[in-house]
Amino acid sequence: MSDDETLPRLGEIGLTNFAPYLMNRIMGRYNAGFRDEMAALGLTTPKARVLASLAVVDGPVIRDLAVYTVTEQSTLSRALDQLATEGLVRREADPQDSRATRIFITDAGRAAFDSLWPHMVEAERNLFRGIPDKDRRAFVATLQQILANIRKHEF
Amino acid sequence: MSDDETLPRLGEIGLTNFAPYLMNRIMGRYNAGFRDEMAALGLTTPKARVLASLAVVDGPVIRDLAVYTVTEQSTLSRALDQLATEGLVRREADPQDSRATRIFITDAGRAAFDSLWPHMVEAERNLFRGIPDKDRRAFVATLQQILANIRKHEF
DNA sequence: CAGATTTACATGCATTTGCAAATATCATTG
DNA sequence: CAATGATATTTGCAAATGCATGTAAATCTG
Image 1 (tube, rainbow over the protein chains, first blue to last red):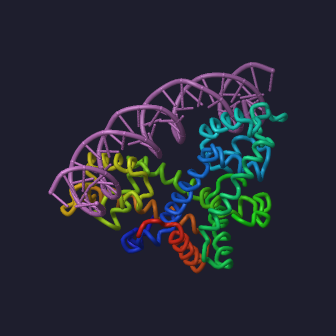
Image 2 (cartoon, rainbow over the protein chains, first blue to last red; image 1 turned 90 degrees about the horizontal axis):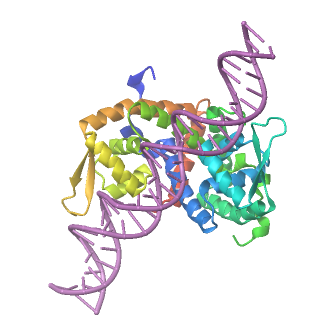
Image 3 (spheres, protein in one colour; image 1 turned 30 degrees about the vertical axis):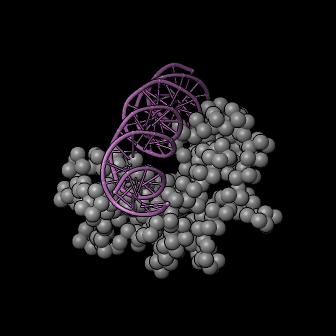
């Protein structure tokens, strides 16, 4: 932010060459579609994200789950209330640290995720329709680098 | 979704290879940082997005602006109320269609955007820190293809 | 060209969100 | 080892969000 005179102007770049804009636009639509499909399954976005995350790492501490699910702690806390009430996840006190709570997916929760996952795969395929596999892999590799650049947590 | 037996399982892919997850995670953090900086300038995310969009296309109809800014119509309507009150944008009735309202940025609005833009550029540079220019360009090209795949509007 | 549809935008209202504070537990330090 | 500070989670509350609806103007249709 020192040499302002070399800053490109937005008008020159154009919104459609500004990566964050494109990504917001893409994810805005992706998430909107996702949300509608989830609603049909009785899930909200945060709840669906919890199930998806638990399908990969079961039993995380809530704070970590908040990172995985890209959800505010307070929002997550309430989503977990609902999921627990519905019997899709289970809260369990951490034996090492009694401040912490670990979240486990239940069989019902896993079943719910199984009905949700095909929608996610389908939506992802739609994103990359017509894009060569090679390009897709390069794209994901760059995404991983970007995430590494900005992540503040250790995973 | 016909040949379900070929569906990869999320556990196998891993969340960190699932592009939508990575993009949500990246934009979640990007937007959070952006939001904090904007708050310091007295702007919310939707308001900042309006100013950024108007810096590129001035005088759009509100419905189009909603697409550009990736914002719900009702949310946008209220953001415009605030921006207009603050004198950063101006609503103007469309002469052709008196249902429509066109939005124009004011000098004060342009000044506000000018103080905001360096933050956006800086944040974008942070994303791509250490990533070769060639890769960055390929990445943006793929983003554009993805957007083309999912966009329902004509721009 | 009257009546029925569609489109543009604003707004009422219920829900969701997120910040900040509260609570409880752990860690550190003098 | 008491005291201070950090960490994990929940919750109160005000603000933001989004759906559904309202109003007004344009478009379509028979």
